[in-house]
Length: 201
Image 1: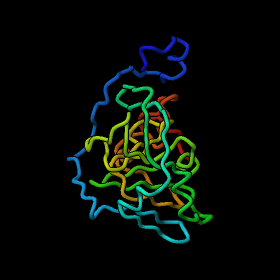
Image 2 (image 1 turned 30 degrees about the vertical axis):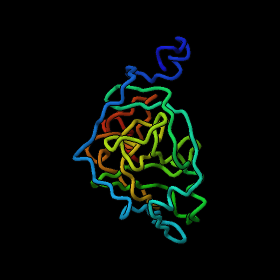
Image 3 (image 1 turned 90 degrees about the vertical axis):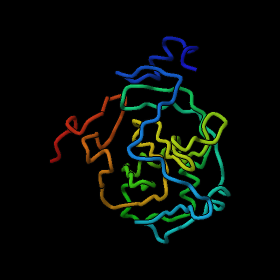
């Protein structure tokens, strides 16, 4: 992994203020939710022409993809070269037709967690809903059965235990965003805290 990278490659992939690790620390607010495949569902709603609800089996019948992507936590560690498996957002969006008003995404998770993203970043080619990491099912503490992966942003935007995607005409800050974390979360700009945000006009 990271130890084998040439110095130039490491500088290209490691954002400022970050330290490499081969481990994957567990950082969660609250207990790990219980998972029952018989009752679990996944919903897509908000500013869409028709809302969609998928059972666990229906979600796993969607086209699957694999990608390698780095992961950067706001607590200053980075884990490089993660192999994620799941459903790319581009494939997921074939299930719905967005209304013109859709400009933001609110991600809803078990345990009451939410996070928010601009639509343009949510539909990036490297964003996916993952259930496997490095050839194994995700551990429950890491988000099984479904975790959003947004490689270009700090890890709190890669929400665990995802249950619903809501498309919205307006931005609504999520769980950590209302508690002082940056609304955008670009690790290359070290956008860690809301105090760093530019004032709105």
